[in-house]
Length: 172
Image 1: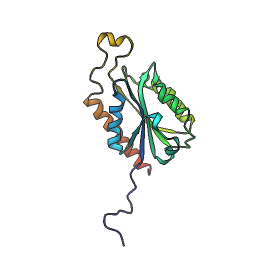
Image 2: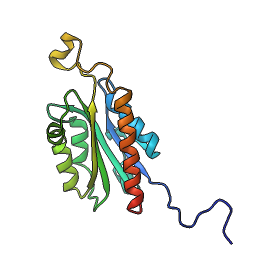
Image 3: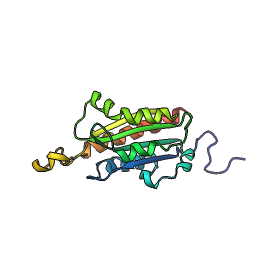
């Protein structure tokens, strides 16, 4: 006899983790919080992530701001210590001052290559603008004030919904 409220064809929810390094204006954390809400994911900083627990997750997001054309060194360095992942699903995300498909692909290249070398399968990537006052920008009031904005966060929500659909379609 079937128990009330159970559905034998339903799958358990995706177990997701977001590993995020965000510190300057917390741009990437804002995006990560939207992802976490949609995916029911936990958000952790690299230095507070136990490498052993990664095997417990179906999907892992890796994100930070972009500095000098790649993710922050704290996140890149973290990936050097990852154990082999053998096909584990992952996604990459970032916030930066300047966007464009070619630039984002280049900005994500180092992290993407490191994750793939560990055996991760990159299912998708996301980027949006973030407020930036690094370097000379601090003298002119910064760039992209107010970003990520409501539209950026709506796009982040749509992205996360798409990830959730992809994972469910794949049986995870």
